[in-house]
Length: 176
Image (cartoon, rainbow, N blue to C red; front, side, top):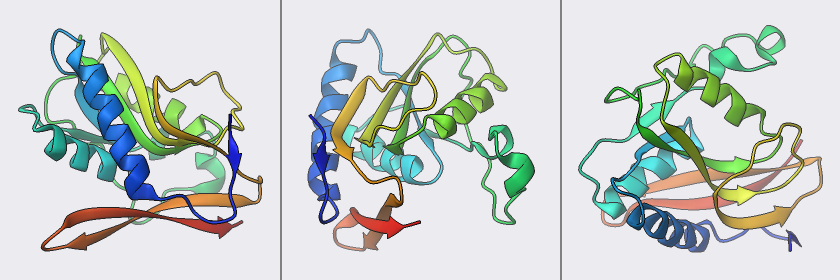
């Protein structure tokens, strides 16, 4: 059951849940899927999951920029990031990772971008937070938390890098 927020959720606690759920999901597969994070929050999560799970194969990053359905109105941001896939994704199992799932449009764009690089055997979706409000039939297989947020509020994942602790996550509630 979704819960309504008065304050941002504890991103580190949710990350611990996501890590446990991803670890369990990977354990039942014949070989680990390729972790691919959607830029930017999903990329940060993929990087940390990759390190914490001690996976041998590298992780990848996918940009949804060129496949967004609002590209004509938003245009290309000067600092648009590029997709970086360390190995071929053809016939590979992919675990696509994102921070917050809302309408499903970013996920759809990321999947379209992945298919520009080959046809994966399967794509599963893992998200830190599912906030509902889907506009497309996108459903995550792994979710750390389901939250109900007003439409005028965004949940932004932020990362803090500390030399001794590594990457730490936190959330911020942002009014639109």
